[in-house]
Length: 403
Image 1 (cartoon, rainbow, N blue to C red):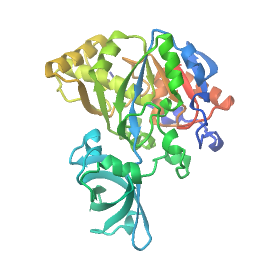
Image 2: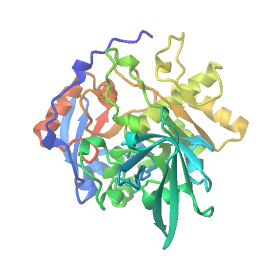
Image 3: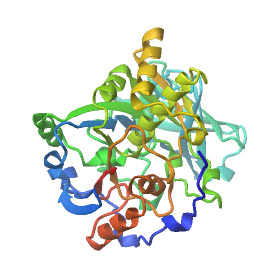
Image 4: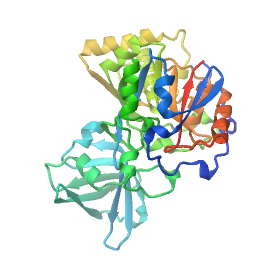
């Protein structure tokens, strides 16, 4: 297909500072919920969602867990160096594996106040873990690529334990505040499980165990997948040609049961969050790759879906190809990366509905929303602004249905 020209000005809107939710509500499910269905907008609260969703639905949610990815070190001179974990490099690039490492690890990072960090200088921090003091050291391996090696003096302790004990919650930059005690719990979904994200899949922040119990009672099914959200999710679009925006690569992990659930519930798939959308749609194109014999690696480049092809397989054909591959290789889980860029002109292949928050103007996520809503995205956002909805990560929610 021909890639459409996107004018970013068409996806801008005015978001007053006071509409950005700087803090979460005390009760997760008391957030507002805007529903868009068949061109109509209605207003609810999130605790109404069990009543709204059809009983023959499948909720697909992202079970990634946010790690306290902001590590603070103090030089002997008093200078504060902030190291933000981005992508693992050694001994493995697989996030779940590197989090369990008990020996030195190397990460690509962002470094605050890097000019104060001299080449060859080792930064040392003290971590209290189970009433035992552990020394955490950081060594700058390559200033240009921002590679940092972390080591600690206890081979019985995993890297994830060191990070959990010493790091700060990586709140989004637009909140413009330091994390507080409550953020450690509230900037995490109640179903978070797999450590590795540096940003929360925020659509899931509204769910509670009580909501899940009501959904179960109604007969609504659920399944999980994992996309480890990267800091690139906050990267603004600066390219004049939107398609030249460097989409961030994120790791995904999906088990066989999820593939089978999607096949069984075709046409009734509701994604919890844009990260679940990106994963589900990436899986479709992975199945296409397998069908087209373009390799077995699960790696979806940002514009792969827009390539011209004589015929696009159906969802069933695609997911059966994945299932067949997993059976052939005796795999219970598939793992890979995606850069998929969803913008107007894209046709959704898996998702029928989306639960999501309200996103930044002119962002990749607004483009994803506009791909669902068409020109109605502006009406939806204007309605939310007119009805005092709270925006962004700690803000209110929406339930958007594809026509």
